[in-house]
Amino acid sequence: MPVQIPFDTSYARLPERFFARMAPQAVSAPRLVKLNLPLCETIGLDPAALASPEGVEILAGNRIAEGSPFIAEAYAGHQFGHFNPQLGDGRAILLGEVVGRDGQRRDLQLKGSGRTPFSRGGDGRAAIGPVLREYIISEAMFALGIPTTRSLAAVLTGDQVFRETALPGAVLTRVAASHIRIGTFQFFAARGDAEAVRLLADHAIARHYPEAAAAASPYRAFLEGVIARQARLVAQWMLVGFIHGVMNTDNTTISGETIDYGPCAFMDHYDPSTVFSSIDHAGRYAYGNQPRILQWNLARLAEALLPLLAEDEQKAVDLAQESLTGFVTQFQSAWLDGMRRKLGLATPQDDDAALIAALLGAMQEAGADFTQTFRLLCEAAADPAADADLAALFATTGGYAPWAAQWRARLASEAPSPAERATAMRAVNPAFIPRNHMVEAALAAATEREDFSPFEELLTVLAHPFEDQPHHARYAAPPEPEQRVLQTFCGT
Image (cartoon, rainbow, N blue to C red; front, side, top):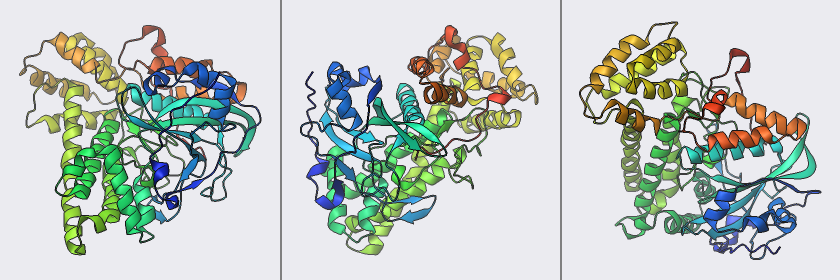
């Protein structure tokens, strides 16, 4: 069956110094593991064609689709605070861009497709575990309503990759609004290539922030647009207990999408200092540090854009600093509004922040599960008899009852009925997240036995995170002590 992908790749029309042109490296025996049928529909691709032998060859990197530019993008980045002037797509190739049925332009990228000029000694490959992990987490984030790159397909290569041991190789096809990162701007700024910074900014404005083009100061409007989107994004992470794990500037998108699901994880018991990433020894990217780190990353974008903000350097710095000051207010507003919805608070009041802080403090002291606490609050909003289940989470401290008295007094001052309030709360407090122990179990089954049924079942559950699914109750339960995942790892 012929595979027709209507590529219209604007990034490949930028100057050659923005990327390296090269085809992916062929694999020995590609086999389709998963194809995202709803995403195929959204972006206007024929799933039957993609699942055909020719389609799988394209998804594995063995066949070049007509019109595909096959480029590896250049970028730099601060990694754990240290600047690396050249990173780039070390194991990824841009298949091209397509405009979906919804009118949105998206990148199609192969991840794990072999060495590129940016590989820095790596093999350019990926193992099946990290590929399926990104598939699971990115699709879960999509179902939670959080801006994210998505996964179109996972393909086994028939080859092994070698990390601590030999592992089955795989290729992920990733879909993104674009792969332009803060680090992409840093790549050119570090080289003093002001023309490239301007070309990149113009491209990003046209693609992601067309309204900025009409502003009095388009590049400042662009900067403020990125600040606003990223502030909302990280607030959304915080509201579901998500920890990215490696918030380097090369992992911070201009589009405002979550990208690069390496050592990411969802928090079980609430603790702002929670770190899962095995390489984050100092806790730089701990859960509670994410807003501060994002602001730091955005300051690096502002630095790269300084020549575009004003001819006078000091004036450019002043404008950038003024724009950056808006981040704190925007993040706090998005987070506070989200927490109000999670607690069923219909109208803002001055003491809301204190009420929220009191709950989080009690949760931390008791080691209460983040997701379970908020889901049970939905039931308690409808029926005070459900308080018993919540009190059990705080049994070691008895911290729930004093807080609940304040919460109920607050709810009594508002109009929504208990049933209406509970319904609204269930729409923002997920019952199901990608529990780390469930994710690891699915990946182990796939890696060790080529058993993809746990992976498939987990995807099915996570596609409906806000619905009660009694027959899948075990996916909602926090881990037992012996099931806890304490470390997650990068896939490189």
